[in-house]
Image: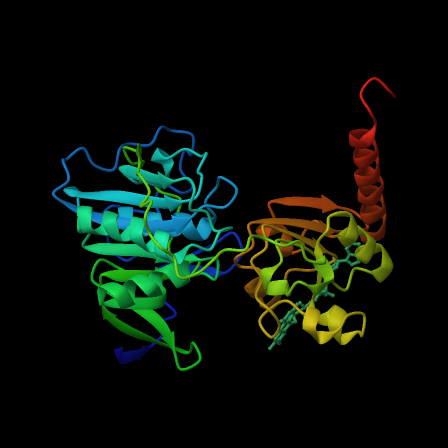
Length: 374
Ligand SMILES: Cc1cc2nc3c(=O)[nH]c(=O)nc-3n(C[C@H](O)[C@H](O)[C@H](O)COP(=O)(O)OP(=O)(O)OC[C@H]3O[C@@H](n4cnc5c(N)ncnc54)[C@H](O)[C@@H]3O)c2cc1C
């Protein structure tokens, strides 16, 4: 990449749900489509089809689904493919793993669901074979993928190497003509013309689209005779305490509002969750530095993140950008974490944690009671 330039703080942005600036696409292939304009306007109105013109070329987005769903990062990659598509460019989304959500809402015209290639199995050759066949069939001009550590980033790099395609990874800004990536510690952006493969950082694109795609679901026969050089030995259960925070799917995290660490650890144990902490809680000596989440700690991507007594300072939010569901427990209804949270319990941390532990215990006892007994 060449042509490094300084980040322009006035470039188009929107404040995202995490309170951080989210760069918006500067232009779209479909003309001057105001991608951001519909966000706050009459949300329930039915959305129009992106295009009704027959496709003469294609954009492709590829992502793994997890437990039948796509995370926001994957949706952003598909949204990028759709936003940058001209009216005669079709959008095909290739979803690896089962997918049970609304396909049209993704903005794609065709959705290929490869049920038995989910991220829980490691079958790189079979995966490559299926995706490569689709790339050969559709010859997409551009291919968009989430740049994550959940299989997509790895698959994307393997495809780039195999197809010797032009590519950009860690893309944080994108338009119909260029991509930009952080450079020199993130203080500058380096840009380049839009390449064939675009591996996007989370948050680079707004996945809340003002249109829908045709959403035609296709199934693909798997390449049965692919001999993989890797053998998948299956999943093995691990002690939650021994899982690196970056890999944990459920995290219960403590901030300065937590006075009783034992209660927090008990709550984490109830959910089989890993324990994290804010910098203040770590500086206080309540948790080791390895538990710190945020700008100067770890970046996590849990499906569920419970923030107990954490204010939601921008440095902490930076570490939980990729978390899917954030639940806040805080005594202050004006705490910044609430803007980022999908669900907030306003109350005293100790009382709410004790109540939760009791409810989980009750629910477990009920589910273990044999039928007919009370
Ligand atoms: C360069 C730099 C890097 C940084 N890196 C990080 C980082 O990696 N990670 C990080 O976390 N921070 C980082 N920080 C610090 C960050 O700015 C905040 O100071 C920190 O995140 C605040 O931690 P906190 O929310 O736990 O504490 P506070 O800001 O003290 O917030 C405590 C919260 O708990 C609530 N509360 C209080 N009592 C109760 C109660 N009884 N029940 C329920 N809620 C209660 C309060 O309403 C408040 O919202 C960094 C700062 C700088 C300058």
